[in-house]
Amino acid sequence: MNRILKQRARQLYGQNFGRTIAVYLVHLFYLLATTLPATFLQDQLIRQGVMEWWSFLFAAAFQSVLLLLLGPLCLGVDRYAYFLQKDRAPGIGETFYYFTGAGRYFKAVGAGFVQLLPTYLVLLVSSLMDGTGSEVLEGLLVLLLIAVYIFFIYWTLHICLLPYILAEDENAQVGHIRRESFRLMKGNCGRFFGLNLSFFGWYALIVFVVTVVIVIVMFPSLSHAIEMGMPNIDSVVEPFTLWAEVAVYALMTLLNPYIGLASAGFGDAALQGRLEELAWQGRMPYGGYYPPTNAGWQQPYPPQYPPQYPPQYPQYPPQYPASPQGGPSTTSWQGQPQAPAWNQPPAGSPYTAAQQEEALQYQRYRQGQPMEPRTFTSYGLAADPGSFLPWVQVEQSDLYSFLKLESWMPGMVAAAWQQAAGALSAQPLDSGAAVKRSLEETLSGSRFRVTVIVSDDGSRPGCRQVCIRIDLNPPV
Image (cartoon, rainbow, N blue to C red; front, side, top):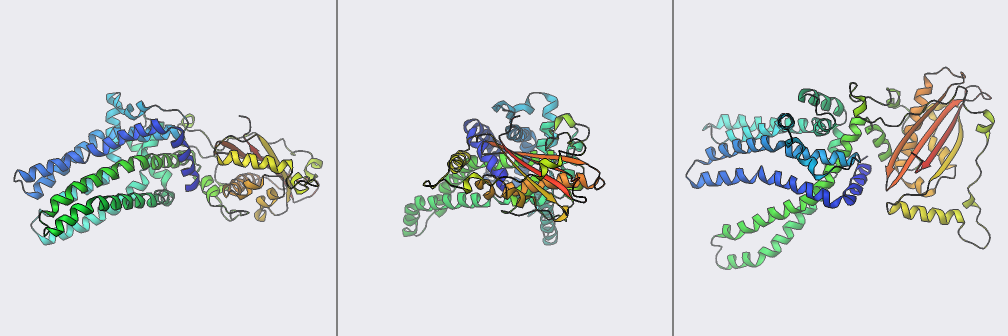
């Protein structure tokens, strides 16, 4: 799932680079405006002779006010990323959307307070430490701070959908948005945590590069200070520390759009009830099949979010009318697909026309260019739906071989099959019932649609006929 979300994020980032960087420069301003003034205030108070504890307390209070008042700006950045993920062509002005009206602003302030509630608690508890004058109280505050950090992780994972729900329905009350985010993230916090953890390598790379560069640049000055007996070593290190922070902020400004778009993709999938499908697509190995013991496909499909706002959230996958009772004629289902033409190369030529076409299509796919519309259809018979392997049936068709190597395709086929098999399991056997289910995904500039039709086989009692069709760039 992470690979699919990150691939989509990279695609959107590349296609909208200038506009997205401009938006995240605003996000950089938000980060600096909510941290640097508080740090500057604390330094000034200490220089004026104010006790360190009181200076930190005033700085923490000042930072809390800044976070509260500028919170709508951060929500505006998330709104831009979400709308870009939804292909709504947002402009830079979406970043300042919550500043365009008093009602919007104060609702965004309330939503931002709910989202950053653990941050305010961390600032409060931290500001109380080292000022009690009692070791016992300070020890209790340390334990309280640990508990607050645990709450911070819990709250952050559950409230992560708040910006996207607010973007979809700004008329919803903040309390309702909080409850919906918690409800939708139930059982999905591990997935969101895994998505964020997958960016750890980028964070480590930024720290490593900045550290190496700063050490190289600082080495002559540091060597000179060591030769002089290290007088005023702080005056040597401090300027380079400031430049290191600036470099980290600059590199993070380039990385944050990637992370923000991937998180917005997660939010979009969560609001549409697509996380299971994305998980199937992301983890299915070549030739694999999701265990039939999983009963996820037995739940109502597609899920409605929220029930009172169906027009706000597009349904996934698109629903198609069920096939007529009895399904297609049995003779058409009994036909066996012909062997692929590329299995029979003409004499004197190492590659057939089909193989050459496949090579061109694969090149377009890897470059993110739309592929030529094609349809691949396979037919099979399922005597035991619980142990039926749909991908084995697909592999016997004329599906492009490079798609067989893409790990998400077997998962997409398995997901569509389980949806269809789950819907048909409620029908009496040999009643002539038929069910049609489809899943659709866009990757690397091409749309892929998997359609599964399952029906009773009138000529073989107790058996199901299975038709699996894969469309590349089907008509809308």
